[in-house]
Image (cartoon, rainbow, N blue to C red; front, side, top):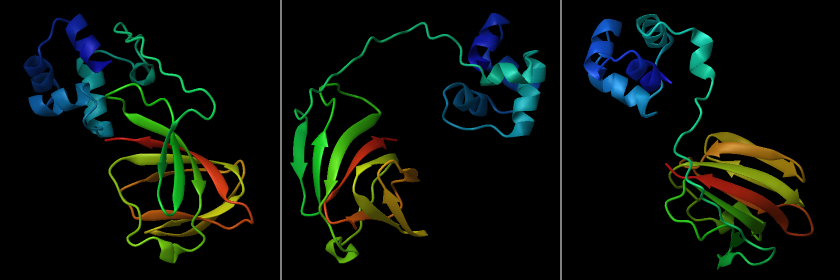
Length: 178
């Protein structure tokens, strides 16, 4: 939205940054979603570009639709087994995607089965499809979850899941890659 407003006014990055009292590189990072500006910087930019603050929170229509789509029939995902999890990777034909969806069966029954705990770049969303589990994370108390519960967390923080029901818990995981 900032880039479009700047270009609509015929302003360069330098002109806009100077008028708003911020660095050119900072403005470039804001326009490319590489940083989140402070409220003060947002205020300066809205004044410089003569925007109403609510306009910043409305998504601009996308003009470069990629038309990407992938499909995985039930049970046809790519299987990846570990001692603690059985993963079925979904929609894995697309390359250069930012999220990785998969169904996992949690085989682990005790935290001691993880040495070390799982840790990787990005963020994860987990939705419990069946069974019960405990999510262990490095900075929080264990979280007991059951079917229908969900959680979103920083995957760089050590984490692991153990089934706590008679049957193995099954979850939908979506990993967001940085």
